Image (tube, rainbow over all chains, first blue to last red; front, top):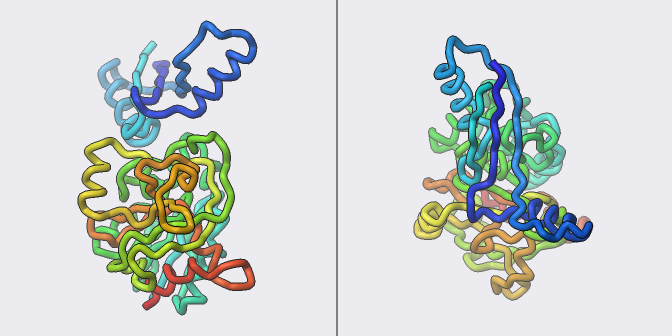
Length: 79
Length: 226
């Protein structure tokens, strides 16, 4: 099964990279954008009997390594 | 004092901290990250500065889950001493041995300069050679040193007196200018609940010999070796 994991910063956590990107966008004249937050995307294959099993495996992957849940949230999408 | 320095792929300050420990009289061995045990008789485990695993994923994230970290975790649980400096502090936070996380510096720059710190307490195994409230002159060199913890965690750390060092000016005042990475409450280093684990962003091992420019970092290694 193909899966995508999206990791984003929690609301309220300062994102200096997002701010820098937003400032760069504005410097190109793209000034109608705001609130830029940078995140991460992981595309991966997972072997599992069914979707629930795949989701459980991926949830464990996120909690153990892919996301730092002190400051990040994650969502799992299974194709 | 027997110290074991855990070396990860990308660690680069292991020899400096080894030198600082030996100057203070400690016996030092290096341990590879894939090792599953610390040498018998280890009093202190050290996680040195550097860029373990190229800072991939998040600083310290992969190192924090290396086999040697299980041994470090067991050592800490037995009351053994653990010191993490710079990337070592990031690894301690990622491994769950210390709360919170080190985020990108608020000014988005890699900062590398001399830094004054306020020693918050001297009744620990790491700081007995200093006076409480003493201002020490060491160095910082990092891109992700902006300490962050959620409000409940922060209240617990402060309430339990677990802040080891804060960024301050030369007089000991906690100014915005002195806290260049933007750390919450100007936190430069914290202890575990039992105060046997210390993580800190600044590099005390840089300043252990007058020839290099300062000796204020030596007190930390003298405290440990005492």
